[in-house]
Image (cartoon, rainbow, N blue to C red; front, side):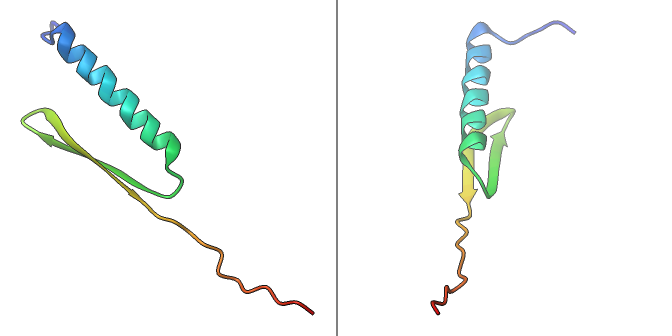
Length: 60
């Protein structure tokens, strides 16, 4: 099957891949959701969880 994408489409895909890779490197706990409509990425959502150590320290 021949490649029917234009060079511009390849640049968009590369840019999206870099953005997603950057998000993956920055997030420690959470999720990344990619929203697609009619074969095009229209939105990327990042949900991040912040975790805290709630253990109280006791001084003796």
